Length: 284
Image (tube, rainbow, N blue to C red):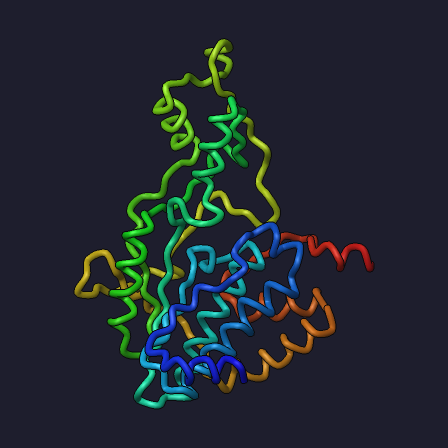
């Protein structure tokens, strides 16, 4: 394949696989593309890494993979399981696999911070989905350094979880951003304020809060900011036939089957009742 040719031609030593459709509502509306890219894209690249004896393969995962309420999180968790399954099936004593799970990165593509800044600059209102929504944040520099260190630690394709500190209440973050801009908040207590905050409601598949661990079984590493999660994984013999079924369902555009397979495979996956995929709804 082209991927094998690329890895071979450029003698790639390390792969950081961060490529994923990560926008939660968009993936809810485009289920096939989310599964195809996030799950099967990972499978193809991981297989190529083994074929070409790449030294290190690091899957960048997400806090949304833990007990997901959305397709994006479910596909990222399945990507974790696939990576571990391939490793167990294809051990070549050369390629080291690892998975690194963390939350939001400040100033990264799709981050809410630039959006809030622009809304404040435009005079408001600032839009927030829910008054109680919380998220984990870390800086780009922190994330990059810890991902590199965690990737070098792996021995058996473990899941590493970065210490994100305490989750942040987004409403409080917006308040600080407004005040730090030299402006005031417009609300019932201060109707003459500068910037109003409007609550728009949770988007399809969105959670009030995110988690980093599926269970409580976690171990320490040499770096206090990196934890080693000890979670359930599946052997390739169990995964392989289900992935074939998932691929068939995706090609057939069978959204009900896709959801059913993901629910059975991904621990804690509880999707919303209605399928939001745009094309699926129009053809029903």
